[in-house]
Image 1 (cartoon, rainbow, N blue to C red):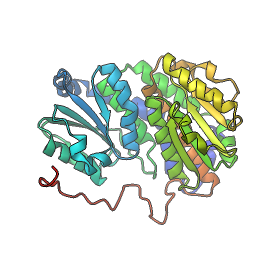
Image 2: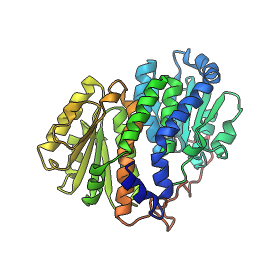
Image 3: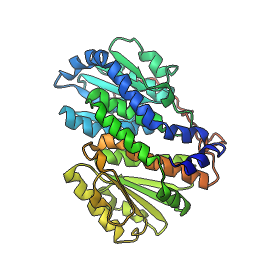
Length: 385
């Protein structure tokens, strides 16, 4: 983060935690890589017998931002592991457990949770145990005092792993907790050497350096922002839109879609006050579609308001791009922790520009850091099921 921006953020009341937690992420990622490396033997002992089963179904589950971590990781893991990997929100599991667990096959349920105290977090794992004959649990969380960690720590057929303590964000929006859990999942289930993590952290430090373009974008007063991406980056777009909605308390409308899906009606959202950010895939085939929508946007109503984030220079045709060639060997899921920094910083800057307090954009308590008001109903064994 630039010294100017960093000083501004750290001296703005009500933004200290969020600014710190965004800026600390490269350090946290290196700590995550070391943590996984130190527990590799135990993780392999738990996972290897499961992954040897050809009919194993892997489900990545979480609520809100934690669900989006699963949506980013699932396509990459399916490709790397050559098996079925589904991202299913815990909010869907809890409300429709029989549909989500319709196939009674051996299952590894991977649960993401910052605190583990959202009612759906533990309820989803309990429902899995009730409905499925053979289910194991990998819990990735940030709070050792959380209900989810306490339930699964040391439990048979469960492996609960804690992120570095600093990843347990105290700000309203998930930032370092999100990227650390996503990275941990990828390192645990598909592996990656420290070279990739170090490259990712190095690029992130560059993103957190001088960012005049981000500051200018935040000052332009856009009333809506659209994030687009393909595959894993479509899940990233969803997380980026949520960050902006959260930190601006809904004062800036944020939308997300896939690069191909955007033309099918959602493009109607565009006005001359709409910012569009396109995350360009590192995959040579997929990238064609991202570049197509990028060119289309830059020739239409969003011509002056379209920005690309990419590892390839062909996306930088207008000067409104961030390009990171040093990350060109990483796949899209691994790029997501670095790419999301742009959205986190933009959301923080926009929140401050609106005179809000990013650490708690909803001082009235209408929306809470840990979800409240959810009642878990007992699973009925009669009627339809």
